[in-house]
Length: 349
Image (cartoon, rainbow, N blue to C red; front, top):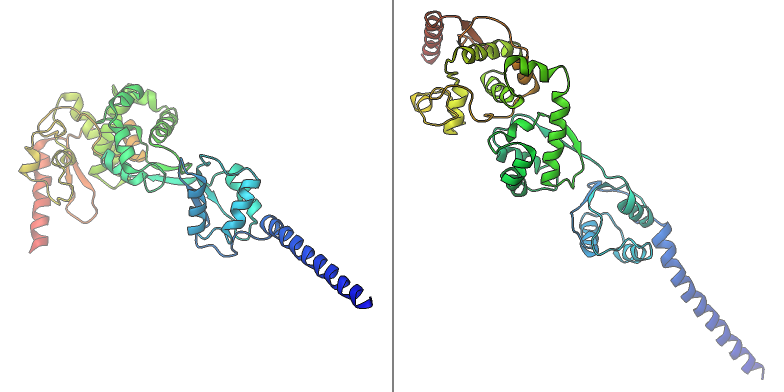
């Protein structure tokens, strides 16, 4: 009898032990998934980018491959419990903190602030160059940007052409969300463009010159490519404005280079200056149909605040400064040009 009772007691003990272990197992998983660290203590990259239109499985794959989660099963279990799993997941670029719990990670991906990116624009020449540069910073790829830049209906809507669109882009560093699409990027640039022109009486200064904002930008793009010396930009702007006033061809070397797309040339030749293109100001009077590159703020302001003088000509200074000498007459200019050519020949010998 005692043996039976002892055996029964052992069975009861084993049953309760097993039940306790099973209960502990099922209790441990949610505890671990919710309260213990789900993100590794060391991250190679603390930013995760979730593309627009991603599914839940794609998000999990991104987190797993990026090393953002320790245990995929725990993450999946809690994501369903927290109703994070959707048909289409929230897109964006998010900063992930090392050592976060799965709960903290899910909350941040679901409702947390995005980590913005800094889009840097400086001296790109062509719309496709802008597209290539911008696609390094935001989700929109270069192809979608180029298509938007070429979408005539969209360009009509915003008041630009493919040739003048570059004038909408003011070189600067802009903070925006990574999942910005192509149209949103252009509209953001238009907003920044308007903010720029609304400062420092720029609208009034352009009107006083008899130029539109785009025309100012076109001329500024030529000044931009003529010199790297900010101090002489207002002088060069004054030369070109003087030429425009008297109906003289601008004869700007950078426009002939742009017309031929021979951007690697170190010397402008007859091939460049005679090339038939509306961009070539050696061939056609007036401003080209659009900018020949992005123009820096200093170049735009140089056109809006030109130095007043009677110069009509300029050429490179015969030294290593990269600056120019200016002249009022062609005879004086010829003397300056001869001096520079002599300097070049002497350097070759």
